[in-house]
Image 1 (cartoon, helix red, strand yellow):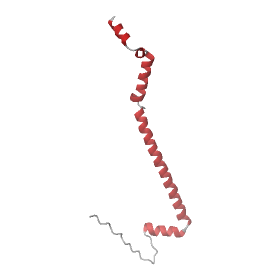
Image 2 (cartoon, helix red, strand yellow):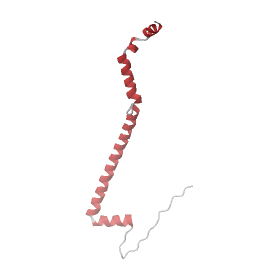
Image 3 (cartoon, one colour):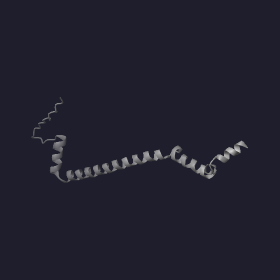
Image 4 (cartoon, helix red, strand yellow):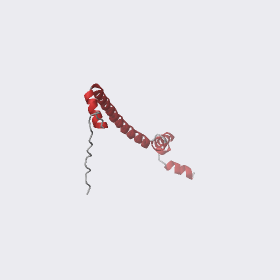
Length: 106
């Protein structure tokens, strides 16, 4: 009889098995499940970061393709690129490399 009195003191909303089951289900989905809210937030932020990297690399690929097209379309540009980047020279030329001075750190 004492247990029945205690059970009657519990609010009606907590005695409803559907509400209790629904609350437990929501708590399970939000905090316990493998795909909980925190995991979804982390995955979403990582996806956004990767999308930004994808856009950056697409721009770099387009720029590299444009540079390649320019180099292959003009022999003068190809020669200039080879001389600047790879220090190539003609047979009758001498190449002098002057190193840039290192900044002093005091």
